[in-house]
Amino acid sequence: MKVPFIDFLNVVVKPKVEILAAIERTIDGGNIILGSELERFEIEFAEYCEAKHCIGVGNGLDALCLALLVYNIGPGDEVIVPSQTFVATWLAVTNVGATPVEVDICPNTVLLDPGLIESAITQRTRAIMPVHLFGQPAQMTEIREIANKHGLRVIEDAAQAHGARYRGSRIGALGDISTFSFYPTKNLGALGDAGAVVTNDDVTAEKLKMLRNYGSAIKYHHEMLGMNSRLDDIHAAALRVKLPLLDVANEKRRAAASRYDDMLADIAGVQLLDKNDAVEHVYHLYVVLLDKRDTILQHMKDLGVAAAVHYPILPGDQIAYSLPKKRSSSTAGRRVAERSLSLPFWPDITPEQQRYVVECLLKAISL
Ligand SMILES: *Cc1c(COP(=O)(O)O)cnc(C)c1O
Image (cartoon, rainbow, N blue to C red; front, top):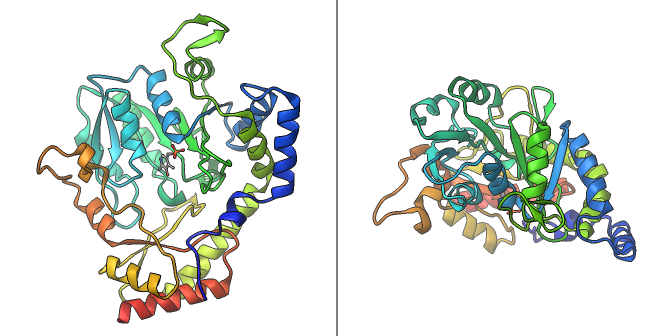
């Protein structure tokens, strides 16, 4: 047996006939930039997120950059980011000229540790950017409280958490702004790059609509220094086909995750991640922690199982962010970077495939 890391056709191109029909309808309509498919998707996704506004943009990184730009966060400003995340969270901060200030994660959830945030706040801090990593919501109540106390914005990187819930509320309108990526393999994925910014604030939403479109609300009138980052209508059309299926897909992810939890429960040397109270996790990835990770990864590959690592190098340890010889001081983050293993995972992975993955993992550990 061979198990891929993700079943691309199952996750990205389903339901193919309906997606192709929606794209054809869009092309035939002739309105493929800022057209009616985008407008409808924005209404539907905002509603799904239990938020007032959704602004479709080019990708998840642009969504994060636009969230910072709309609050005029730039040179001289500091933004608190988690030590372990996909590099895009940090890149958004540096792309607008601000400085990422890293705060370590909780070692057992891999989410921003609220207890460490306050000591990282300075006169220059403008925002906190929690990441709902792997599909599990960060501790938003604690983060919101700290942000309110210090007058900071909360910008959620929700690129891995479409449909997740925190204390009953959908991820989307808990912070000031939430940003999403519809990269093809995300829980809700387009057939190329796409993203969105979600907010409850009317004025912020209007500004974001201008910023993504050359700073313009009326053609050839430019009120702000904007960028070109619009969500294409053909992607919006495909996303509209897939959005109604998202809750069922997330439910299947939870069922598959719970099967892995059971299969791995009593295995020495495999540490499962903790779940925070009162969250509905959407398992963008299924991640465990173990020693000798790289050797195990290679053995599993040899046995036909494509596991992966998210993410092997902390953003603060990347060459792009390192002064000569400087390393991130986040010990919990680094330990996770060295020990995390993402098992093959998608909504329709079968119990047989999962059993084989676990069998190979055990073999690889004992080798
Ligand atoms: C995917 C991802 C992004 C970036 O999204 P793109 O659409 O690829 O630009 C940002 N943050 C996190 C946590 C992600 O997983």
